[in-house]
Amino acid sequence: MLSRLHAARFDLRALARLLTFLLVVTLPGVPAPARAAVSPFPPISIGTIPTGGTISGDIVLPLVIPFSAIPASLDATVLYDTVTPAEILALSLLGLSVPVTVGQVKSTFPAWTVSIAIPVVQLDSPTGAFQMSDLGCTAANCSYRVTFHPVTPGTHTAQFTADVASITIQDGGALGVLVNAFLPFTLGLINAMLVLDLVGAAVSAPVPVPGPGIPEIAVLAALLATAGALALVRRRPQRRQAGGR
Image (cartoon, rainbow, N blue to C red):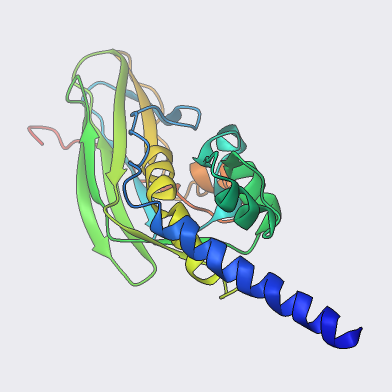
């Protein structure tokens, strides 16, 4: 009896490895989800200043993002779906059901993290009131400075996007090669997540400009408190000198 139980356990492990292999090798032809430049976060206000004034903030993008930091608004996003019985069985052996959603992965594998390649970023500012400079990258994160300098009154908007070419899922070795099955879909998800809408207001009459000692606004650190996946960390006001920029 014991030998039969041992054989059954061995067969189950072998089947899981085989089905995991089948799941992975059938995936390469499946395209990653298309990116839509719609931020999953509420618009971030950089402040209200008089026309001609300047205020800036830093966006810090970590190169390792826990799955737990993915906004709950994306929990219903499908990472993988299949009707193939072998793939369905392989997923069920890992506690997953089809379609595999972000929320499922977050609850089943809370330790998963995503390491991202250094992204290509851009800032779309329709009115030209926002500018961005690259502050460089470390092994842990990349930083960018966004400057708001309106010359006309009104509400000005901009959108920050980061395009990541490749990612690696870190799972502590628990799932091994299976994580590769989710890479194309998770890459699309991460790119969809790295979108920020910025808003700034300009008025003709002078208004107080915050001094350099204001507390960190940590906009996305508040939204993603568990990981601080993105953060607009500090405003840096500057007054224009009389007679020019």
